[in-house]
Length: 272
Ligand code: ATR
Image (cartoon, rainbow, N blue to C red; front, side, top):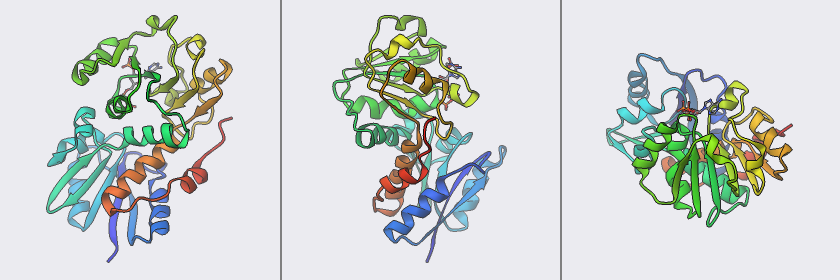
């Protein structure tokens, strides 16, 4: 029997998840159907339970429902708990299990696809919102020399640091970045969605080998342009992260790991 999955978000028309999971199913011979659901702002939990009650086996969750998905779950992973958000649910034995694969997907893209191991490296993360909450534990587990989180609202970053409680993690304001050097910079703010650049100076890219933009499909964002103009050789957007988090979800649901390379190649848009 065909097992059903879906991504839920609002809006949802832009989603690439049905394409990605369709390609994974084809490549691995899994008999699944994967759809897209526009969730209702007032009845998100009903939408999820309704899908499950009609035989759904799991869901991907995208904006603005990741926190609600986390809250309605019966059981949550440590990653989802720190993020207070879930991007992936599994329905099993009448229970809802919540995961958060965004951070692992990002790490896999940086370390495996972009061949930039983070062990011993100095890492700068811009932002302290949901995206950073989802990524911070996998980043720290990669064994970096230092992780600096910088945010306009420094108190938000400080609150995250207190929760994470790891000596490798330092919190700064944008004004404190002068004179600091890094190996990898990740823009995990939502600035690019509004065509804006976080308030960083090009000097911060002096030693940077990789500048990574979490947003995808936006071409050369102001952040990536600044990085390139400041001499960074490797720049990347979040398409690989999207494909990798989907692979994590697929493996969690189906027990088989799909090959991500062909899907990344298919979805990658040149950064111009
Ligand atoms: P997400 O789930 O995408 O992380 P979020 O939780 O709303 O979204 O967080 C947005 C993040 O982008 C925040 O860190 C925000 O900074 P503040 O907390 O200081 O507001 C950051 N952000 C948004 N626009 C920005 C901009 N133009 N420059 C710098 N940071 C920005």
